[in-house]
Image 1 (cartoon, rainbow, N blue to C red):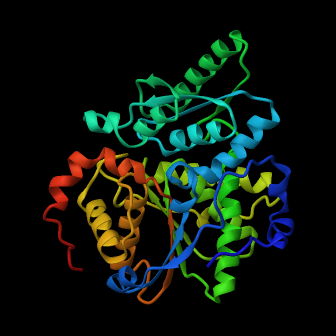
Image 2 (tube, rainbow, N blue to C red; image 1 turned 30 degrees about the vertical axis):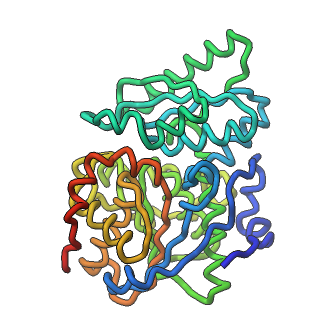
Length: 359
């Protein structure tokens, strides 16, 4: 179903979002689709918010976030954008595409988050698209040093300024205002309106929780709209205790930014790291099974880093009873399809004989 987002949603409870400059890059609203075959296998009524279909350069959730970062960059008169992320960063790919769409130069800093990755990981997927888009690539040798990565970007920005450029730095998740989270405040309004149009109410929402911006923005948006549905964040980068604190901080800051301080309570932030091991960008049996189940039951492709881990978490919640039988569940598909090809060497032998594990 395609519909226009009602102006009353963003001019009412979420009117504070309008105070921040925004550049429209997404195709939207993105589809809200039922997934009856996969849902039946899990004993739930499953719906998918198809944010893998945001459009530009293979799409994905980061494009929603970048609309506000590019809004700020344009407001400041920038001619160059700088961004940091993992080697297979979806944010970097979409930042490069957005920059080209807007006539800006783009510098990408690639962090070494996945140790021992092979040559395919370093040359295919998002990296290949980065190069196709003509991004200038830089390397940062550490994978879990957000402060250091941002400091390196700032140093690069100063060098560009000395060359007469006007750079704009998109900082890592917690080292600047969480502008990107506003994209998922908007997405929450989109979901609420689509659900209302279909006459459905969700019992649970499941999304990946990495930078925390998608998770926190969705939670803030839903709570500001009066929706009390639990939002389960599935950890893809760090352990649950650290991630919970991170999302709580981001949610509090986002809520204050749009004029809804204290709308998210501490107990609202729910994160699970049961399928996270052995770490960011690393595969496990639950992730492979989630990829196979989604593909073979729905024709739905999941990336191994974010959306497949989130689906693996949803599957675990359904099997454990955390999500009850027959409940109506919304899965936020964050995209990331190009990264699938970067993991071909790891996936190919497993999927040659893959079978789903019975409950």
